[in-house]
Image 1 (cartoon, rainbow, N blue to C red):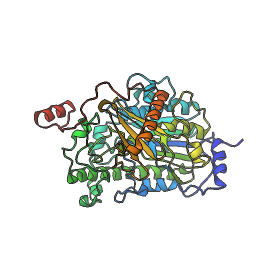
Image 2: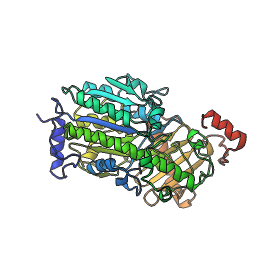
Image 3: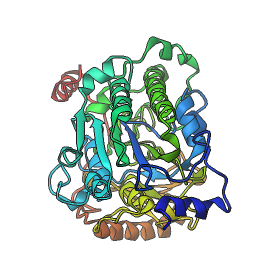
Image 4: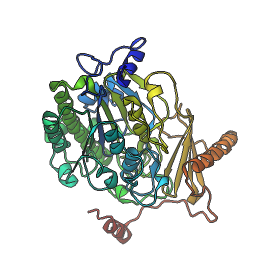
Length: 467
């Protein structure tokens, strides 16, 4: 009987070129089960436009470029949202559980529900996690057979982002028992601040030539409900081009250093003859503004913060790009489907296998995102509506002509029917996901945003422990 991976490769090979992930392409030979190893790489706060192969004109990411050219790139991958300013917390819990954060009480997804380590261990995998401890899925991560944690502040300050995780991952790969395929979830602590880069990586960039984001603004035009959270205190108001270029310089240099460590890991897979039988998945827990729309953090539903890079590369994955609307929480059912493991019941995520096999162009017609009680959004293949209930304000963007969301069309009377339809769709998706937050409130507050200054600013900085 053919293994699930062999069947997938044969189905794809008739009409699509072989994957270029490694020098040779061989059918499944991963352990005795015939199932591929799984290597899931998750970075912290990495925008989707920070990989050279995906269009960034200045960033140096040679190893991620190779991965992107060798695999399937999902250009419309999103996190579903957050119920806390620490967006990475629900994001990582949703990734590992395949469910929206509305499905559980408290900050953590329950370990007795569906989750990655249980599903893959039950399918015969040796499960391994190494990553940051704070704002992560602690209860689920305890289900990994090998579970290791970083001292993330130290890891971010040493100037070699990702080194410790990659060192230990390579040591594990060299000494692991080979009677089972492995599932490795490596959750890096970078490029989240504080960003300390190797001086050689900083020297790769001419700060003055780093382009500003196309949606750069000195100040967000209104109070979006989260304008003075910790991340927004990392640069003074109004944002200046020089200040944003400084942040981008450090951000890009840290990503370059992380790319180097990822390259070490992928080289190690090849040296150990594991590349041909390992599915590599690369993504991040959320994006980041860094000057876009006058913001610095990830506490918004704009594209720069809600979208994440998503690449799948390895045996049976033909290279290409896919613009289907997908969630990061789709990865659990996708991986189960690809390796022939049962997909746990009760998931909000769906398998992306039909997209990988080019049997379908979409797995959903629209996509819903949420941030606390102050922001909700829905988008289809072209249009995006963002709703701010607490200030009774909406934004409408035509992503086909305005992917950077710089032209709000909500005041155009010709768009009123579209806005009404999308508001109805937004309410429907709220019901689907169990979101009970209102889209309108009886007494909306003033939408004006005046940046804090003087003693008020110092009090806020002390609250968030920002020096």
